Length: 375
Image (tube, rainbow, N blue to C red; front, side, top):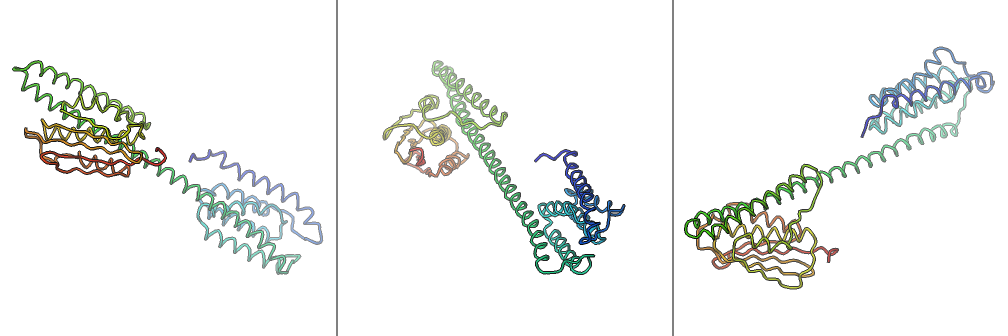
């Protein structure tokens, strides 16, 4: 919240001072000369007490308890010296409200209780014209109680507003963290897939460059395209992070054929059920799971054949990637974060993922439920 300018902070004390001074001066003639009131006219001390409360309001934000003590004390002394009743009670009301709202409830209630006791004793036994009786005390107590109730209501409302703002800020921070995590995961998947592809194709090109230059050329072309793709993806993610605006990555199952072609693996794709539009998060997760599974095959089972099965159902998307196992040695299984990353994607969407050996090869199978509102 933005702090109020200095002049705005001084506006209330100035208004209260003018109102109390002019109001008290306006009622004193009648109360001084009326035989039923017998109040004492304003003198320099009286004027000082009238203005002490408004002056105390200047520090009501920084020192609410001190402000309340000065406002209530000066008012009680003013009344106790016999000066006219009037709008001198405005400053204590404002000071009480500020103290309660700022959290100094015990001090506010104590000071207000002391003021009530003083007024009860004064009007019953010390005033020039006494007004004893339970009705008078009840009326004064009701008015003072109403002031406290209003202050407490205002405090509760502000606390609810502050809590609501805190929850909103926490939600914004949580969403920002989730977006950064999503971007990091996307970047990891893109880099892992394309760099693994570049590594395999570079090894193939080096092996074939002398004996089969045309196949080596094909491998180098694949390397060129993969490096271009990874640079494009990285630039896209970095632009999003720089701008601070959330954006859904465009990778989806509609680009699966392109992914399979660039993988350099012998892949068979099968579709089970009627393919239809999917929620963006399901579509993106299915693509990334296939991408990571193909990356693992490239790294751990070079030369293996792969079967990708997409199962479309109104309730869920099933993704199954099975490889036959490679003849050439690859990296040891479990050397990266591929499988845990795929499992985290599935679990985050309320689904599940299994990764187990299947004959000589390996099978990754994920079930991604489709939310009811998207069916």
